[in-house]
Length: 202
Image (cartoon, rainbow, N blue to C red; front, side, top):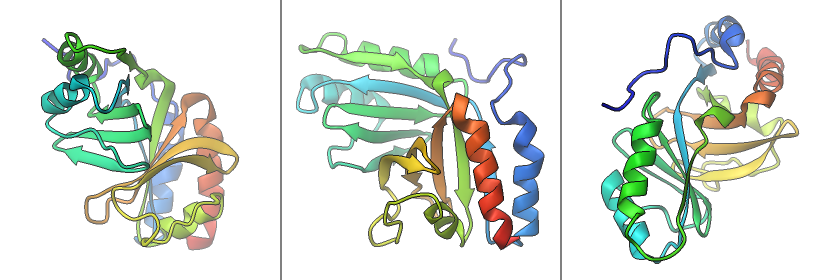
């Protein structure tokens, strides 16, 4: 049976920052929402986008791996993030990383061509940045054009935020905001930066 929840002994990189992140949400009166989304399953997939393996993986996940650069495809509790012409990050709910990895490997296993499937869940944590002022907050430290016309729902980018490398995802759900996927070792620094930048909205 697949794991469906993180073990009790796991501690997220931003566990200590949770009260301060929640305080911003309260003090900004709905203008901003900051929170950690800990332990999201993250599986890196590399394969030929035009191969039978890509079709097989998409079928088992219930979605088509995005082929347009810097786009995201979402189906149910699984999100596929485009990282390159032959690379994707498949994100799922906490505790499902082993199941996702196994399903992807099985689907692609008999297909010809090189396929790499790697569980990278422990490498990153995810910050949620939401609310009407989310784009303004992120723009303080990101050189991307974050206007909805340029970076609307369903878009993603590997970029720098406050001099920290992140994967930025504009969520498709109404008012869902942004995912900021950051390496665990930089998560504390980035959270502190977000908290400081958010002070003007409090």
